[in-house]
Image (cartoon, rainbow, N blue to C red; front, side, top):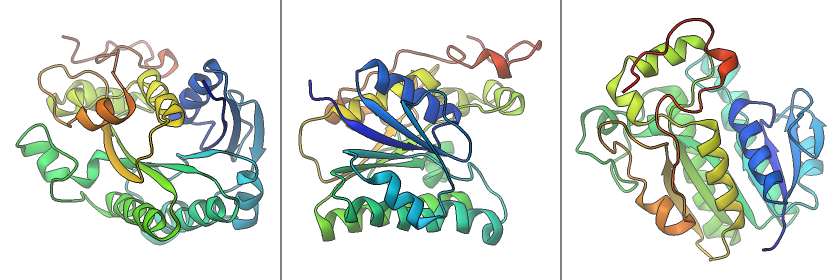
Length: 258
């Protein structure tokens, strides 16, 4: 299997760390990019995703970019979402183009199909109408369409990954555990890492694709995993609450255990 040099932005975060670990386990070289040192990466670049020159430097010599760095939910648009979620999409894609990066993987969200996500019909498919929840989801719609433009205009390969719910704190654990839909779109860090490794290693040419990535459902498949299985051979192994990082569980019981 061909070994790759992969840039992971947001590499110190929960999903970024999981992606870096899975890629290194597969023998790939990982360059992390974050505001702090990335312990899971082979090489760590400390910087901000709003710095275009830093992004150009970080993308030199890499085969694939996995772009995970962002404000992770609804915040003030002008001070948080615009500089952290919109502007960096330009920087990542343009830097990748200038440096001849073959493949870019952009983190999107199930929040871009919020109405269907909660009301069906299930499973929600990638071709279903976009119904973004609010401004955060709109930034992910922007990322998806920007990626498609770069495929059409510059011949790159771009994967827009609509990620499930990966808890980042105790409050989110309680929300997912007490919500039937959220449990069915839960995404463990380990499953996220497995998907990103598959996406980096894929040898077939695909242009632009959108896929949903979650762990195994508890009651029903809310988000359609068929494209991720068919194109990348992704098969989730975990089911809520398997894989929730112990450091954020605390001493309280986990709700929603089947």
